[in-house]
Length: 134
Image (tube, rainbow, N blue to C red; front, side, top):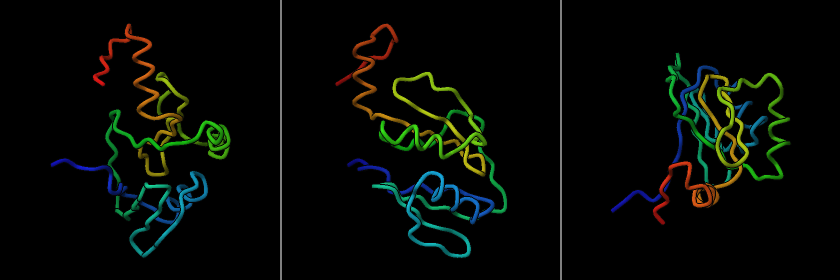
């Protein structure tokens, strides 16, 4: 027995309208439902729940949510985020990425490429010290 994938992601937010606007208008997710203390948005197979909270305590580590973006759409989406987007890290890995914070400080990544591209990269660069098992 094993899990079969990600069911949904829930993020605590302090201002529901601001967060809905960010995920819908800036990242392009589809708003599916909204109520006084939350909202559901989707993008492809991703189901994102925003849950109203009195405060948000985001940890200061590398934990983050990475969203798939096509190579063609990546520059347009980064441009739509604008110069006021708060970046939390520079990209140092394979594939185009932008690391940004949402309005409540949740760490997000917009990333081009999937696990197969990442594994191919490490197969071609064994000097990086990653052992690919399949």
